[in-house]
Length: 82
Image (cartoon, helix red, strand yellow):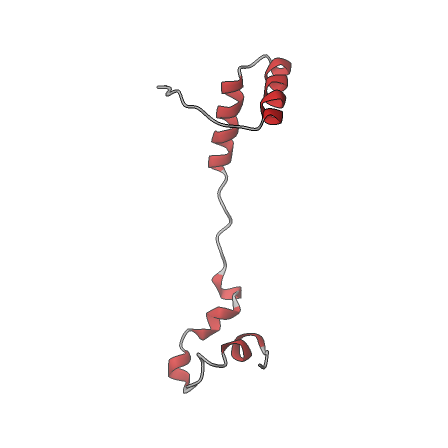
């Protein structure tokens, strides 16, 4: 694996904790930070289910005969009246 050096600005408290963790685990700070970043990058966000979004009901509104959708959108979407 090819490594590239970089600089990070972190709060002093984070650096102190990172040093303690590195000493406890007998690993370098670079290894701990690298592993944490890889783990963070591997986390995938849950896909968004747009069918549950009330805004989704606007799709096709133009064909419904509703002509005031831009004015009364809250009422149509959420049942709120202005």
